[in-house]
Amino acid sequence: MFEVVRHNHLFSQGGYSKFLNIFKECIIKDKLIQKNMKKHHYLLLILLLICGFGYGTQRVIDSKEKEKTEEQSLVKENGGEDTGEGVDVVEKEHALKLTIISPEEETFIPRQARMYNSFLEGNQKYDFASVRCNWKFYLNENNEETLIQEMNNTGVMSGESKELCGFTSTFIDRVGKLRVVLSLTLYNAIGDLESIEAERTYTVVK
Image 1 (tube, one colour):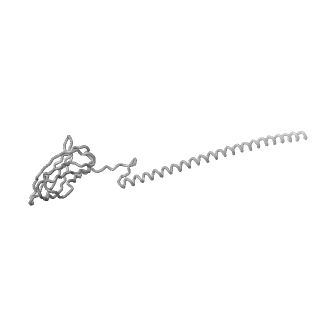
Image 2: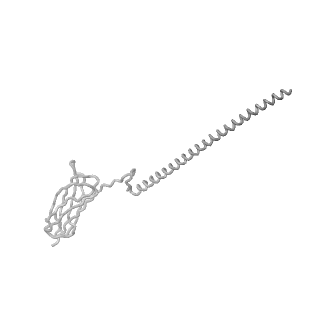
């Protein structure tokens, strides 16, 4: 009976040692697990920081693009004056306007040398088109208007505006109300493109 008890006692001591070893292994494994979890926590924290930075950067980019879009819309509403990329350029309207700009004085005397000239503007179609000019001079004497002179000359239109049809003469030799009429025609090798007319009144005095 004594031997049996001793044998059980020895067995109990061996079991206790094994239990201590197992317990130590569990503690070591737990520390390793906690260490790995800390690493995972650090990695998760870094990942969250990267995601937060990326989200913030994207918000800033979206905000700037929205502001740019609003500015472009405002420019278009105000007449499309911005020359920035992506903004449509407003085409200018083709509307010819002809003005007799010379002589500048409203009165002159007979046989006085006068330069007759005109200014054409609003051209958006006919660059380097040929120009045909027809001048007519009507003099009103004693309430009767008479065609006293007709003059033809030519030129070339270039650009949006240009002085055309100019010449100098002394042929007005009588007094009265002088009405000057200019008919201007733009044309090319195929035919006439567009015609326009202007007139101006002067007084010829002694």
